[in-house]
Amino acid sequence: MAKKPNRWKHWRSTVINLGTIFVLLMAVSFLPADTSLSQIKDRGALKLCVPAGYPPFVTADPQHPGYDIELVQAVADKIGVRLAVNKMESIGRDFNPRNWMLSRGQCDMLAGGVADTVRMRNFMQTIPTDIQLGWMLLSPDGHIPQKGDQIFVIPGNTGLNRLELSGWLRNQGLNAQSISMKAGEIQVAQQVFTAIANGNVQGLVAENFTACSLLKAKGTETNVKASWVFSSETEKTDGQTSNSGVGETYSMALSLWKGDVTLKRAVEKALQQLDKDGKIAELREFYMGGSIICDN
Image (cartoon, rainbow, N blue to C red; front, side, top):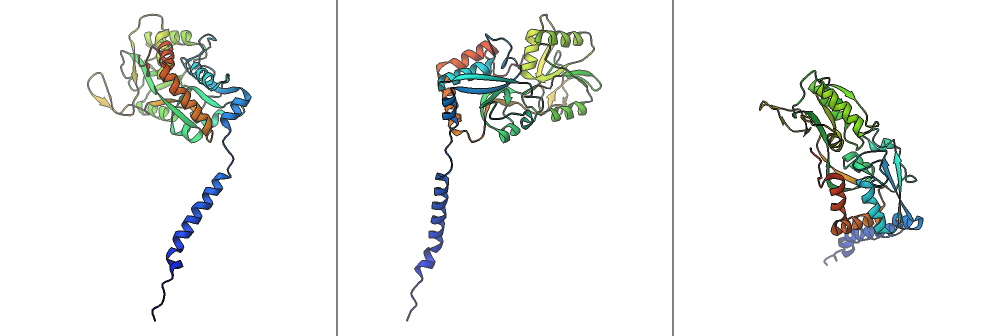
């Protein structure tokens, strides 16, 4: 007499798999709901952390506080809350954002020319924009400084990799002197372009919007030109090429804490509406002359 097939054995693995999926789905349903947006609405304020200064994204002018601040102000208006800005000196002191000493108590969002780098995405979730950030060189007629030349370096605030930049400077044999933007654009521009004109230094490396703001603040005509410091080969004036670049360009981003799903959706929806209404183009025209790069 033939032995009946064991139907349970045939279906057992399928039943176990379905049971496992059901248990996982039930477990997810018991996770606490994301209340990031409702908490902000209950509080009545969206807290934004920005660097102490980074034109044109963050300025000292209360009438025109900067592109990022006005953009997030418009987002807060769409959400229906006020904007509370917290300017922090710690932002940008290190290229690793985990060392910026940020907390949820201080900010719901982070802005101010923040680069959408891997380190930033590992720390917070980001909403990238089409505005590009990267290292830029200011030098006479755009010439690449030669080995042994003196140059100024402004480290910047956005989270671009300064160790990579330091390695490039060493490989190029350049003698770098770090300077700060604390004195303001006009004074720093005078210091930089006077030193270049006198031959004391042969250029400056800074984030592109910092370099561009110095060019605009120079006050007098100069032969100094801006050029990207790329990771690929860069053509020299004599037609030769040199593997002289460093890094790459990154999208500027608005950043939020990981897990704040409802807030991120609300911000993205507001940005879409602002783009459709023409508000983003209006801010970009005012603060950057319509440029998404600021490359001279």
